[in-house]
Image (cartoon, rainbow, N blue to C red; front, side, top):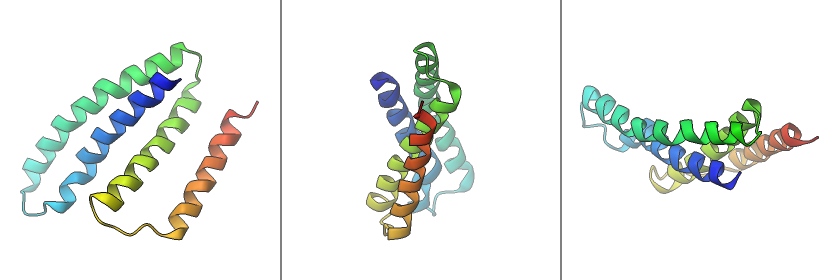
Length: 110
């Protein structure tokens, strides 16, 4: 499971950069941003697909893999938005995150 989470973490870092990194560079033309984003996303897929395959082969259901991926995405995005985009992190974001963690807990509850 650790390998799966590490791969998902790395893939989400690439995807967050691909999707949101250009927001600080609005002077770059859109076609260039799209091309660069697709090139960055290629690395994301090279990590995400193996993470899902390994997790599935280890017995993690696709539902659980998706839930793990969503939590990892939110963690990565929160760090990216606050550190790179310099956006404030608000209390309602934190509360929402804990509610999502509750959903993950229910997903993994036997």
